[in-house]
Length: 115
Ligand code: SF4
Image (cartoon, rainbow, N blue to C red; front, side, top):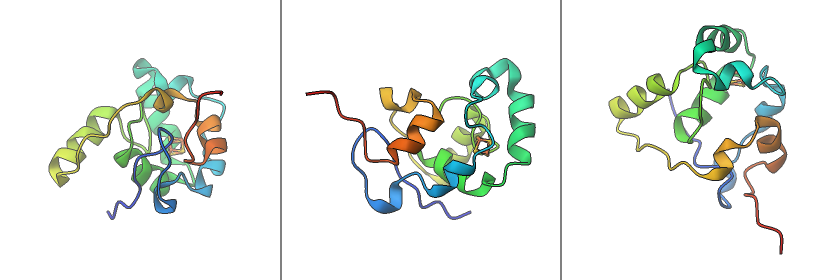
């Protein structure tokens, strides 16, 4: 697997690092409960298995601090993959807890505090 994504949302990022248009087709938009509840991991993984954007989501999830199931992988499976491929663990920021639909709207530009 080639991973090309980079950190998102917490600060401006290069165009290649932004969440792609694929996120608009995510099967989990508006339904984060099963993906954030580790007691419902099996349910979330089954949903991912039939998601049309699984490949893109997995690349993104492996490079970003994402809680819960994403890209058809649990957090521990993603951490194991990173160790095996010498990919550093992403830094978790407050923005990483945003619902996916907000993340999609943000498109990786980063959220700024009101002035
Ligand atoms: S593969 Fe990604 S976008 Fe699709 S349902 Fe799973 S977490 Fe959501």
